[in-house]
Length: 114
Image (tube, rainbow, N blue to C red; front, top):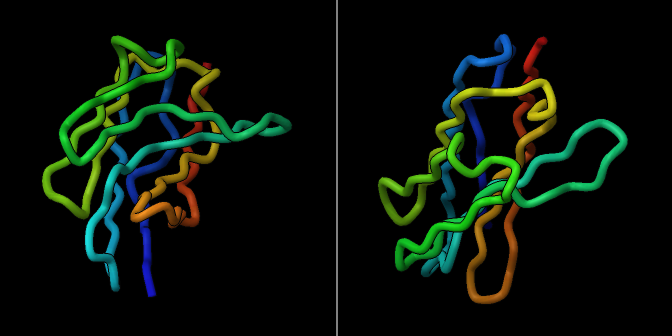
């Protein structure tokens, strides 16, 4: 069984920063990539940032220059979010992709007040 757990969400004023963390555990032989998605109220879930096992990073245009994804080890990723905007508000989900199977966390709420 695989578990993916996010942490670090919260309430912050516009212009502030938050750091999200995600850890995967369980019976996983290898993780090909880990990424962050978010879902705002009434909107579809969207990809925020991705990092492959080889260290390749990709970001949504809306967060480029403000968010940084990092991977301290094979089972964990972080998302440093700076210069937050109200439109960054939503539930942030971590996903681990392993051998074609996706494993999702329960999500962590990020709320940015104007």
